[in-house]
Length: 135
Image (cartoon, rainbow, N blue to C red; front, side, top):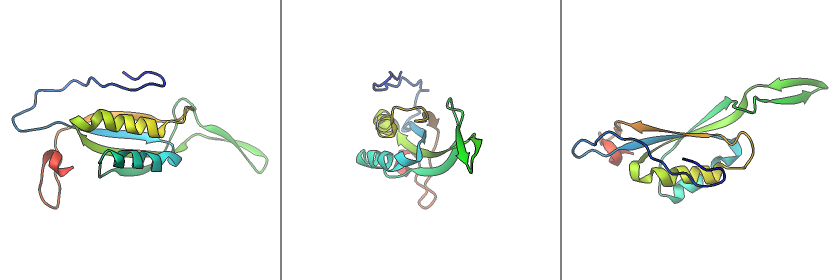
């Protein structure tokens, strides 16, 4: 449970692992574009090597914003965002989420969201490696 201005702890339910398998999690974070470098550096400090970055547009509670262009007011419904996707081993999850949350936080509306989901399998296309070694 995340506390306002505090740290997060995760109690995600897991099915029992089959012999020799390890669980992996996918972290999807929607952040403000100018926070991307800080988040990337925070994840690199943890030793995470790969991430996918997608330019996105969206809105949440802030419902866009009103702009003024050549004297006319108009509403920008969708604001620019960045979506980061990272797959991590279970034992890296809480540190990675905390690093993203700390690096992406401005304390203002629109800071974004973090979603965590379970990954069943990862396969490295080049080598055929599977599981956490393929991350």
